[in-house]
Image 1 (cartoon, rainbow, N blue to C red):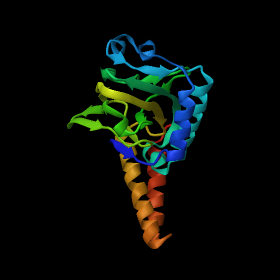
Image 2 (image 1 turned 60 degrees about the vertical axis):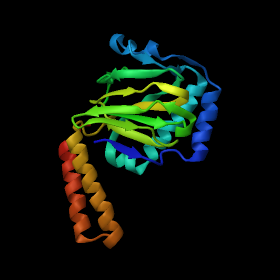
Image 3 (image 1 turned 60 degrees about the horizontal axis):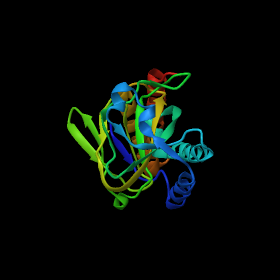
Length: 222
């Protein structure tokens, strides 16, 4: 399931993050790629040991975790610190797949996200392209919006033809490993919200809550 979430960052927080990032230093992104991915990775990344990186990432993770839609879809257990990536004119990232495990201790990457820190009119090209059984899906979202997708997908970033593309790319270990389980639980939560908005705490709402809780108990890994 691919989901776009439009309100991760408001304008004030997007501006604040970009101001922080603007004071930091960037390095060759290929240094963090594996052997195969390194052959197709051509971008810059905010140096992970800089104070600016820590400040920006703390604010990004806080805002991501606070977003209700993100919580409902991802059912997050652990969020890996995102990479702050800049792709200038001529840069991009060829077809690759994210590592299954990241960090020490290892965190399983169930979901990946791209949080757009640049506005679409700041660069040409640079679309995130996801590949699934239905074909290719291209994304270039407004500033502050996120595309959230299973880490099992091949994906790429098309070459930036003009301007500069700035994003945060992160990973989530979910309390539910399987994408189909997360989709079922997300659908039930949407029904819960709809029923509560219409009829408050009705018998139908209580039954949906029971169903969600019992399925979550069945599907979850702690």
